[in-house]
Length: 166
Image (tube, rainbow, N blue to C red; front, side):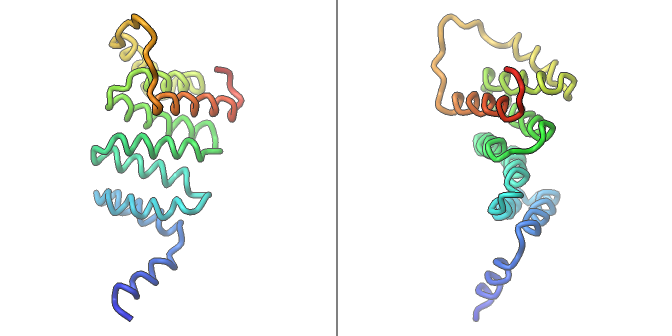
């Protein structure tokens, strides 16, 4: 048996929880791509998916892969059946990432949802105000992209899941 086969067989016996912990250690050490690999393996466990995808999003954001980060945060939200606090935390980092990408209407939608759930959460109120001032006046209806409508639909489903009014 070759060394690669031995290492490969050892890797398959590692639990998803251990993969997640390895991912955190690699992330702390600045090895974001290696951390993403560990978090992806951890996401195979349904109980770890939300945390693993959120961490994948954070790693991607740090290395400048913001579109991949958005996807990972959306995936975390789609898998989330957790507490409103967890949802708010993920929505905040999603909002920050969307803001970096200049996707103002989606960012505002995420931040407004957070404000309804937790009015004093971090700097959300100030961010909403700042983004609202920058937002160009709509002269007509703007077509939403598939990505934008996906985010909007996700937020609507979260309202239903958490029993909140829109």
